[in-house]
Length: 308
Figure 1 (cartoon, rainbow, N blue to C red):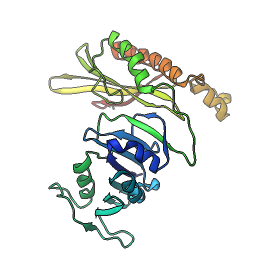
Figure 2: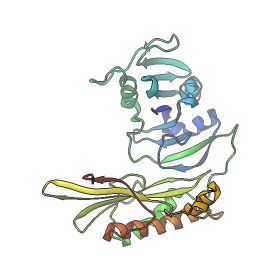
Figure 3: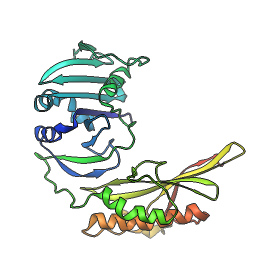
Figure 4: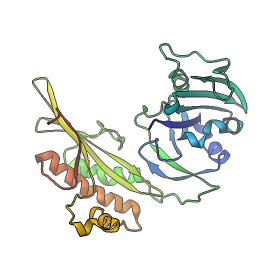
């Protein structure tokens, strides 16, 4: 299944105007921008990006957004149709448009286009142009901290009292430091290669997938690699619910299967429960990374070189 995504960017100081214009509210935090609903992040360029699926049709909101925010830039990607498009508006008026193909009678380009970076092919050109102006490229911008949003008209949620990311930094980083991991002052918790250590000649990294709001969780992921005589070997994986061997009668019911293979339901303190579970899983990952200690909660997603 190909990527289907749309996004809108405005200057960061227009954050509240954007939220009010689209009737959005903060509903939590998440570690990525794709496939998780409407999310928002500040860009190093001084812009703010709002990302959703193609079905959210954020490009259709550009005239209204630019009326509230002064200027607005947006793009969409529909991989299944090999189609991309970017637009810019100012004060409700279209400034320019660039698409990889005509769509519904709309031309491939309109207005006075900014300089397009060289070597961009027809499909990539709208995305490359938009990236050159605001600094956002779907799935390729590391280090961003994503905020989950909800539309007020259809869902009224209460944002968590505590930031999950800040709780992770406060509670998990001291534990990791005690286990020999190193990291910058405010590490990106969702990025591989940021929290690292060298152990027994192996270069190791640990990072986290996470979400708060409607669903709150922290997933522990890891990678360990060594190089001998120019040949790399290693593993990457994570920690998850324990795998168990079930008898026939246990497999007979989906309810029983779920009860046997899942963690217990968290308490009402969802962030506290997620932190406690992450601490436990960090210990499981550490035991595996230190001495290959096997555990039913260790899941290996990739091993190199591949073993037949």
